[in-house]
Length: 310
Image 1: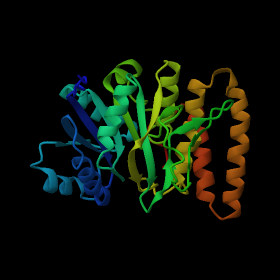
Image 2: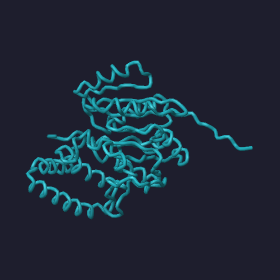
Image 3: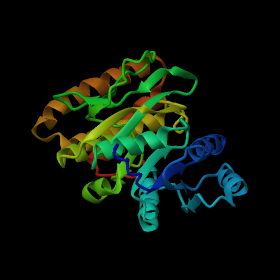
Image 4: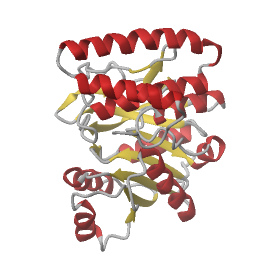
């Protein structure tokens, strides 16, 4: 007789942080609702004091949908804080796992099943899917992430490569992007919540480093596929907001986790940011240079959370 596979019913909470994301929310939520799982699904939308009528649109569209919960914050407290609000609501609901998902994404119709299956194969691990560009769905944005051995710089595996099936192996990775993080509750209970000092950018890098320090594995699941409207929430990488938070939070993240190699990282950081600033000056982008120096200044002054002057 063949042994029957026991189907485990789960409670899965998908957490979306919304900040003026009216034009993205519905496509993302509908893609999540199109998934079927063996258990209960709840979408928790945490709004960071949006001013674009997205909250009204969400209420009009999903007010009668029991699986969609809207939590409004009184101001923009940042990506980490809002996700932590969602995680706490998920835990109070009794979730077995949470999926932190950017609202400028759409997920495949089997993605949740595949993530849950991968989590069963690797209990106690964080899971990351394959992410492609929304405007070119055969081009990879992230097939997991790696970390350089000395200065601990993260990169997306497969970035901008055509998807020819070269990243179809389920494997352990060292970094997962905050665009989509599957977290079993036991991982959250061991590692804690996201660090709210980051506000925006590098919270995922810090969390990946934190998990590694605790001996918690991160796995890439290629069968779980989604697409991402890259840069939609921050208007792309070429913005003062991006330059500020990268300059500040990269320093904070590595100060927390790189240990004795931190002075070596600082030397690399100084060269890296100087080259970027010179390039921006040559191209008339002085605002990016000013934002970078504000980020460095605020790091040294211990000013974290929402950026000063941004």
